[in-house]
Length: 503
Image 1: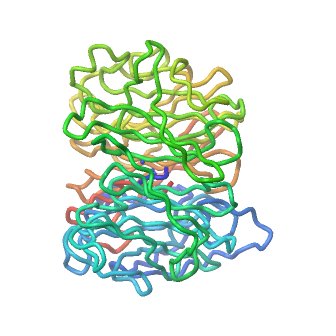
Image 2: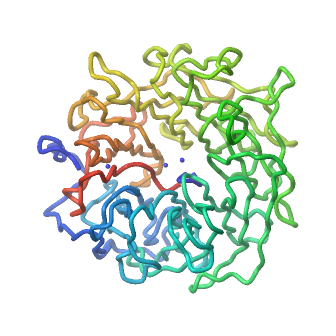
């Protein structure tokens, strides 16, 4: 879940595999909610990335456990951050952040869901990426019960430090929760804007840049929806190639979950325009899914929408191509916006895609776009947390689909599971490996590295797997590792670490 909440405790035998490069030297174990110092040296001239919190030129990884217990409060939630380096992710430079952390607004409360949505951007334009956190269950003085809260943790040379509240919702808005959070410059003024959802269907845009106290002073925009829709996920990109950020979403009709669709709002000098519904080649609205990401797969200068439709078994499956077991849809962008008439649909029965389509696989549960193999075309990674491996049910898997000049293809696709050689651990029932996925270049070798979450691992404690990509494979020898609550020093019971990543 990019924007969203875009994006888990290993068992004893699941300790980091021998020789993997993720871990170096002794590990400092912080207490639950504590922040350890991020000591990676910074380089002033290093390239700044949207997910580089300490400015050293390497992408960092933020992973959520919104169901975790913090200070005895079940479901308060926390976020773990692991910093990138020339050798990939390095857990010796890590942080665990919650509302019990000094400088973070609020305090841990039952079912706050801190980390229910995560995204990254340089909100204060100081050259360091900041982490935006959604706390969908937060009760606020301004909004009331479960109004929700979006807050920022500020990046800097030593990593994340301090924070501020950015926006609160109205009673039961759940603002900033469940993937309904993203950022982008939607009015083209050079500053990142916060985009979230109020009443589950109206877009709320808070215009940046933001001051260190969380205020912006640049106004807000409410983009209203006349229908009783529900926004399921948000993502940002430039769909029509005009240089201004656009917003795309997956939606349903509220009490009619089956009526899923893909919509987008084009950005411009006045902010977001009214939404456009993506139409299919049959002249009707294209059946959408539950999550999406944006990237220029075919490298034609227009960003494309990639939609994951994992939930199947509804009446609409009868006239939806490749719905069985879940699907991934590529919708190319163009000068007029997203073009659903040229959409490509893939599932596990598509040529080249590993496995076979089976009900409940969850193909398309999460989708992320980045260049894994370095050929210049962004690829798509998707999770299948319901995939059965032999007699092991719901063990889970991850599939990497290749991007090409012609768009997304199943040819050359790769699958990764806990039974794949060089992957720590083994597949077990209800692990849900691939419930969330993430792509970013943690070692700056030009190849996007894969992270996958398995929130069901170790009896719902959850774990995270990290894979350093190679030119021909997503699983490189000595480049795979796993970490969880034992390493982080957090409460494992019911934490479901790896529920989502920052995008």
